[in-house]
Image 1 (cartoon, rainbow, N blue to C red):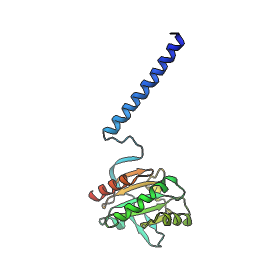
Image 2: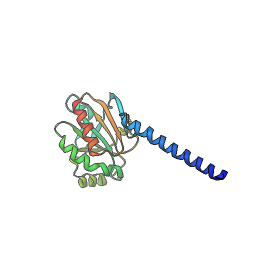
Image 3: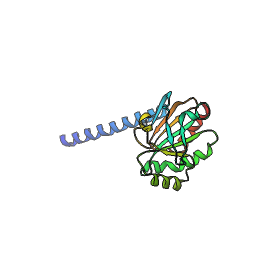
Image 4: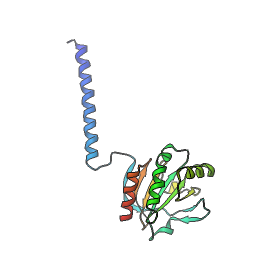
Length: 180
């Protein structure tokens, strides 16, 4: 075997070993219950910033209106956002299933009234929605959309998800919210 062939095989072996070790560490993280996804963040409960939101219906609500009464799922979205479109059918279905126990609220970010209303109609969204005109996203330190917060009836943020969430994740987190 020539020296160049030996070097080639040594480099190839190092690459294979590095890939194998990376896979082992990734699988160990998944099996340990520790999230390896940057999309979810386990939160120590913290007070949810109160806000006032004018809804498409013309009614104005505050987060504090629900304190002591009902937990809230707060979802930041826009019609032009592909991941928002991906999760919209799940939000439409799950919000209907939990409407008696949880208040779902959509906060529209950087969108037009016309496009947002078309999105709501397209996906059959029946929960309340309004435009963020007062910096709600800033108060919640939203890093991108979609982004969802689960707020217990005591006004504490207990969970947060950045990016599109699937139906199973939305259901499990909403059930946990009801039980908290």
